[in-house]
Length: 92
Image 1 (cartoon, rainbow, N blue to C red):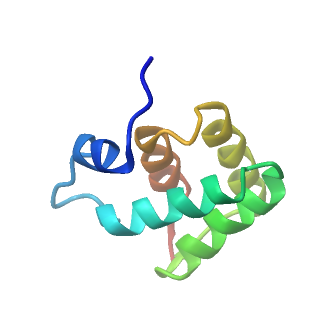
Image 2: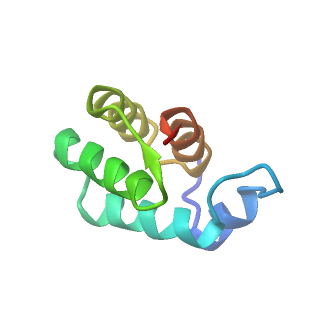
């Protein structure tokens, strides 16, 4: 498996009208997660919660922790991050 740059990952993350988050937002979140090294799943879960709450969504802390673990196991792959965020986001 080859390492992909952020640009390549962004190009692979196909955005359409039903998507909730912009490519720029997702790239910034991914960079924040990677810069933190995702060493602490609790901190990663908090980042996911803050990201979603800042966009008007509610999120379960337990669900965010579970999602952070899955994102971490996937190496913070963009498709996994998008999938987990969309599953976490609860309309307030």
